[in-house]
Amino acid sequence: MDFKTLDIFCEVIDNYGDIGVVYRIAKEFKKSFNDSLEIRVILNRLDEFIAINKNCEKKEIQNINGITYITKDFLIKNICTFETSDVIIEAFGCNIPNEYMEIAKEKSKLLINLEYLSAEDWIEDFHLQESPLGLKGLKKYFYMPGFTKKSGGLIVDSLFLKTKETVLQNKGKYLKKYLENFEIDFSDKLIGTVFSYEKNFTPLLESLKKLDKEVILLIMGEKSQQSFVEIFKNISVENFGKTYKYGKIYMKFMDFLNQEEYEEIINAVDFNFVRGEDSFVRALLTGKPFIWHAYLQDELVHMDKVEGFIERQTEYLRENHDIKVIEKQNKLLRDYNFRKENTLEIGLEEYDEFFKNFKELQSMYFDYSEFLISECNLINKIKKFIVKY
Image (spheres, rainbow, N blue to C red):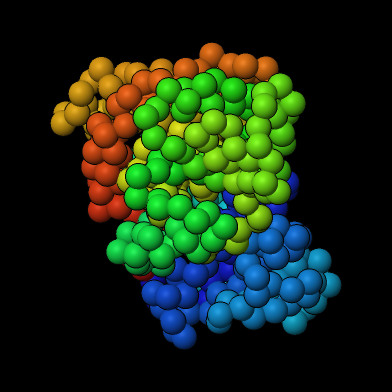
């Protein structure tokens, strides 16, 4: 299908993951099609987008790097002046305004229901299945992101891959950029990021104390930082402003990073603790050891997602890597995520094996990232589907 216009709808609730994914998709489509494709992103609110994109302002309509960003309220108020697009992406089951859909039924060609990332088996059966609208013109299809060739894949955008390559070639430069106050040699330090929901990290600090090297933890996000503040009430730490020292462990509380800055830093460090969906995928694509904190859901539904990912990574990794190391990493992922509520109670997880098997984990996740980049590229897959439609 020859398409000239693309509208992406996103409903931001209370986090940066949804807009983060939509922002990446919009940028990559723009890079691929340049001026031949007009792209609009319709958002219900701007606060989270302003936080991750320094060019965004509190405006109802604005153009950023060739992409038009519009608030949903502005769209509804001015619907009589808008033409709907050839292709519509409905991100994560958001509600597209009825005023828009009434026009789209007659004018638009393809509606893609982009679902949340999932590693569960059943998504392959639903991927690219039609969702009947009962219309002659506009057709709607499910698009199911996942970790296999038969799924919709992961967002592997060329901008991220370029950043990854640049950072790896200039690692010292980027570490100095984000650790400007550390007058130390980074080459013999273990450096990691921590971005989580509420979590008691006392067991992590105890494991790190056993290592024969100094450690730097870059603590990101209010929930992660507050979790460490609570720990500091019970242990003796040296306070250097936004940096704390506990034995040979340095903990730096980071200011909020935009999307591009976050991509730089997670590629520069040795390991990443991440949360949600967007940072989870970024951690995977770095090819570095990581631990994922899944978004908490009622009745332990989030554990189904964790188990699904464990199954997918084990299927791929077991052919070329030590199954005992894989199983220990899987146990850590389960224990780290098992909770009925987000609390600061000490969980089941133990981190000793993560650092004991660190070199093998480096090899494992490098291989896994190469597979995901080459065989599970959502951007390429979704563009191919639209063009062939």
